[in-house]
Image 1 (cartoon, helix red, strand yellow):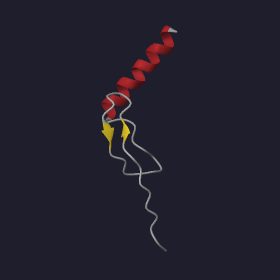
Image 2 (cartoon, helix red, strand yellow):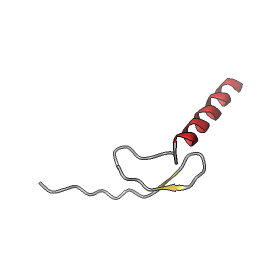
Image 3 (cartoon, rainbow, N blue to C red):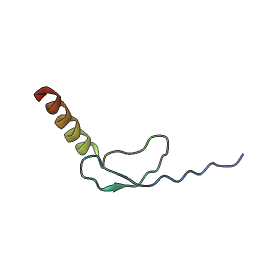
Image 4 (cartoon, rainbow, N blue to C red):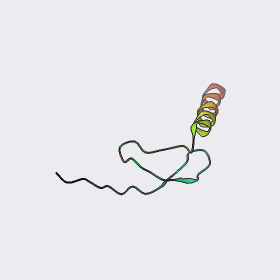
Length: 51
């Protein structure tokens, strides 16, 4: 069987908006690293608490 090749354009990091290279189409990267993921979640939680 042949290999399916799917091109996925770079998505921006949700924290710093830097374009990220996507290696997997089934699970795209959303953050540069774990620290940006943590900061994004903390800001989300604080926003929910303040609302």
